[in-house]
Length: 290
Image 1 (tube, rainbow, N blue to C red):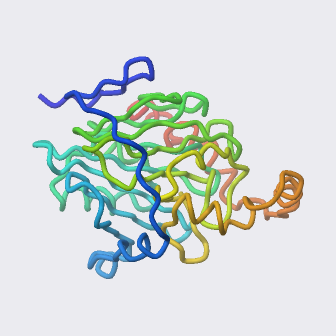
Image 2 (cartoon, rainbow, N blue to C red):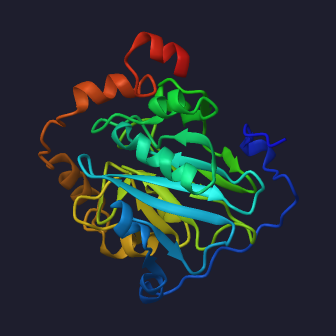
Image 3 (tube, rainbow, N blue to C red):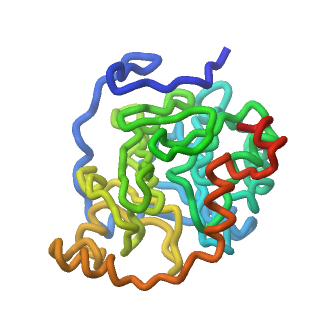
C-alpha cells in the first residue's frame, strides 16, 4: 500500500531504498541548457507550457502550467515509474484547479500533494478547492508561513512522491515563510536539478530574495512562480550572470529593491486572507478541507 505521508526530517535523510549521493552536477554551457529544453505538443493544445529535458530522469513526468490573469506558473511532477504514479502540484491557482485535476486524470496520475512556495498575495491558491474535489490530496506549506495546511514543512525536510523527492530550502525575503523546493540529489534523481523558487528568485528579477539559491549547481533549472515577460525557465548560472538585480553590490541592491514603486496588488485584500486558510474563506468549506 502506497504511503503518501513520507516527509523525512533533516536528521534522518533516508529513502525507501538506500542510495549513494552523487557528486555535484558538472557545470554545462548556457547553449547546451537552452538546446535541451523543448516545448511539447500539449503547450499548443492546452494553452499551458510543458517542457521535457533530455537529461531528466525517465522516472519524472513534468509539466509547467500557466494561469494568465496572475501570470502564475503551476508545476506538476510525478514519478511515472512507481506503480501508483504519485504526483504533486506546486503553486496551484483556484481558477485553474479544474484544468490541473483534468490533466492529472488524463495522465493516469495519483495526486497526493498540493503545495505552496509561500502565502501568495496576487492570486488565490487552488489547494483548498483541489482538496474539496479530491479529498485524498494533502495541502502543504512551510511552518513559518503561519497558514493552514495538512502538513507543514521546515528547511531540510524531504517530500517524497514515489521514489523521487523534493528538498525544502528556506528562502525568506519576499515573505518570511518563502521556501524553494529543489529536486533531490543522487544518481536516481532527475539531473540537472530543478529549483521551484516561488517569488524569491524570478527570471532576471527577484522578490527580496535569500541568496542561498545560488549555492545550487549552476546548471540547476530555475522555475519561478511568475513571469511577466514570456520567460519560462532559467538556470542558477544564468541568473548569477544576467540578473540585473543580483549582479550589483549590496547597497545598489538595497536601492533597487527599495525603489521598485510597485502598485498595490489588486488581489491582495482577497488573496491573503483566503490563502491563510487553504484558499477557502467559507467556514464550512474550511472545516472540511483544511
